[in-house]
Length: 94
Image (cartoon, rainbow, N blue to C red):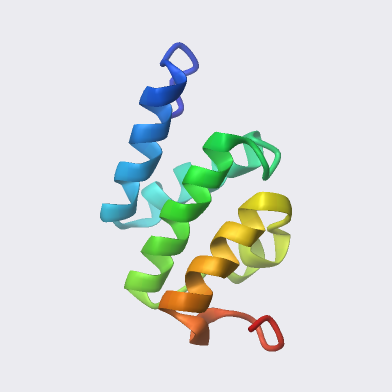
């Protein structure tokens, strides 16, 4: 996913596959990619989907990064959490 020489579809597949893993290194890699994509690239959106899936499954969020989210990445995360784990959204976000 972070290999700049990888094709776009390979990066996208890697980002999607990370949803099924867990741990701080996985979350950090997804957050880096979301930031690198300025919160709105296709890869940032795919990473946001995976990150939200991890958070919903694990029952926690990174509150600092959740507050930092914007653009399409925010829409992805809030949309997924709203369906799968609404209790993880900040008050008033539902």
